[in-house]
Image: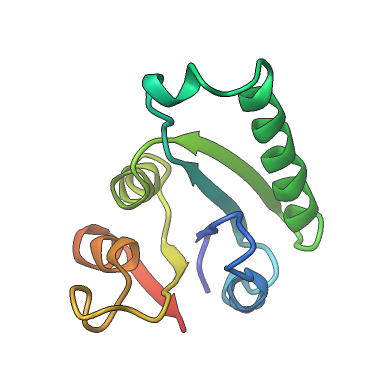
Length: 135
């Protein structure tokens, strides 16, 4: 169905990417490419000064390992780890890499988000391709 699918994942304990990966497998329909993307929010310099030496390197390594584990489950999949603001970066990465469909999970929103989480809402509003929102 789609040639290039982007699965935006949050690599934390609160979000399970299982449903998003299953949707990507179906939407890729055999020979479509799947990119599993995690956007790491930048840590302010004033916080970095208080972190133990090597902490940031360890965090990045753990994220790469987690992405590799997720990509191993899908055919034609690769993991990408980038740094930036989640909503903006997902949309920019998708546009720059000719993504046909973005799959993104939405948490249960508060009143400020009403129907979607803030990252999912930004992606839905600004993406120039199809967006599949997982609940």
